[in-house]
Image (cartoon, rainbow, N blue to C red):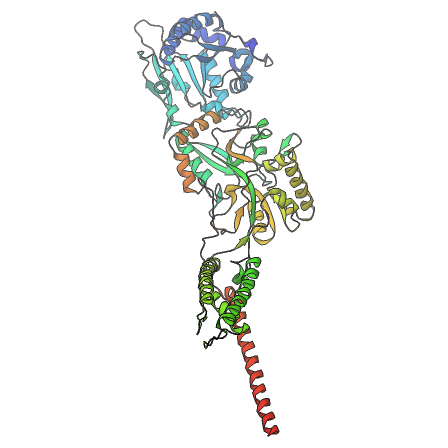
Length: 627
């Protein structure tokens, strides 16, 4: 009962048979292990492993025993799915077939090597010597489990392979002998065989028993990783190493999967731009298979997913927004800030109107009596009502009852007005006052004083260039116009854009996490969610590393570790500042206008004093001459 045959593979047949199995026919004659012994031994292994999906590699010498082998496997485990591969014809495509077969999505390739000892030795040697640049075959050495049957003591000739998970079963054809199973372990002295138990008794797969290296992940293998410095996520330190949120996530993943790593940055300093059929930056590294994976805040989108894979779940998600600098308003006019100009005009008119009413009451009701009112002149009434607004008392009061009622109501009005004014003036002098130059993206486009830009070589550039939103289309058109005179508006360096925002009237389309926490409250966002973005770990397309890293990230998420790392690096809450309550130290600049008023008053009073002195001297001289 055969399963899928080698004809099911869409790969050209290679007719060179002599490289691996030129002496495979001799194995049957010289090997102490017969075909029936191999089949029985493999059946016993299957009763422990319970593999349901596997590859069976065979050669011409063992092809006749395939039916018996498949029967044994099916009896031990129901509903198995397998692929048959005659390595006498297909040996050059073994790695390609095992690493790209779409029907087998499990990253751990389960392989039964059903051939003689010489064939086994040469297949293992071939897999060990594969070039690390050919379809990333290094994964095959760590993401596969191999089972083979040999004669007694053959294991000592097969301990040079670099495959991480190898199970060798010795099957002597003797009724008194038992099958002995060995797995190839790592040790300080190199690889060595250790005996493992083939005892049955569980309906569950005992892979962790027969392949103990699996719990050790990559067994310290060094991976080549691509990265790019980005504020908070990846930061380069003076000693050449890296720190940040992404690095802490990587440290935990490497601990779980037991691998080491070294970093390489893209020579062009870009994140990934599509140039014809090739890509630049980090995405280009994945497309050319120069690195094993990308650990950086790289964004996944439809275009990039055509040439690379991205991990799930995302390590961080946020929205893009407009980052700009809030200009501080001058305190030269801060005395009048709490009151609008219309309110000030109304107050001045009220002072005059109340003064006239008070004068009318005093002249009308006091006339004809012996009472003497000091508020019998227009000037004195204006001074009286104006002094009440300024919370100043008076040496005399109105003599009429109606005048006193009017004065009482005016004083209560003055108390309320001055309380509101004083409270606001104190608040405004002790906090920063900033004015928003625009409140929407449309207003930014209409603002002729501001320029704006985006991160060059990023997915935002591709999103803007293909958007159907008319406002975003206009935004991108202006960015290209600005780029003609200032190429920094499309710089791929975040620091360049932040510096321009701080120094110039410049707005930057950036992620919420791109705002430096030490930049001050005046560096703020518009508050509009323009594009949702998610940051992922990137992988070579079809990488077998991805499922394991995805599983590690899922475990970290369920345990709350990702959330704690986000909190540690300040990524769990948006960076906000309350400008209205931020206190600051007084400076002389805050008192310029009050000082001007006092100085002006002193100057005017001296001028009046001089004029009064000259008037009195002239009047005295006139009186002398007249006498």
